[in-house]
Amino acid sequence: MNIVSNWNRREQRIEFLVFLFSLLSPLLSLPSLMKHKKTFLLTILFLGAIVLGCEKKPQTLSGSGNVSGVVQFRDKPVANVLVKFANSDGVEHTATTDENGHFEMASVSAGPYMVGLTPSNPRDLPPVYGNPPDSGLVFTVVRGNNSADFNLK
Image (tube, rainbow, N blue to C red; front, side, top):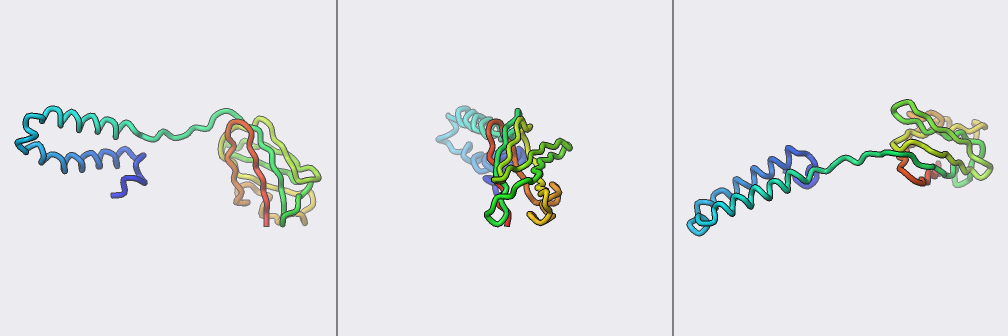
């Protein structure tokens, strides 16, 4: 049973407590612990409450962020590239790179995005990068300032 890697699953924590109690319950029959039985059981209950209460809460992304970055192909900046961030809800944010390959987007909703890069000159980038779902490029926007550099090979 791999408790550490699945610690955020409630079932795993309950299994761990049952396993721990099954190991410790024979100790209750020891004469030296009989007079401390109540304290022992309260300690087990207290530890159980701590273990069950340590559920990892999923991180929620809220707010918006500003995204800036550079698009490069084979270590050279690419000008006039349409940079498209598309999320699973169909929301899209776009910007165009300048002569240095730099782009900026303001007030992008926080969350994960698929990224598409479409150059004005089709010879500047391989076409696979143009369609966000197919490009293999992803970026997660967080609240505040974000740097999204794409150095393509």
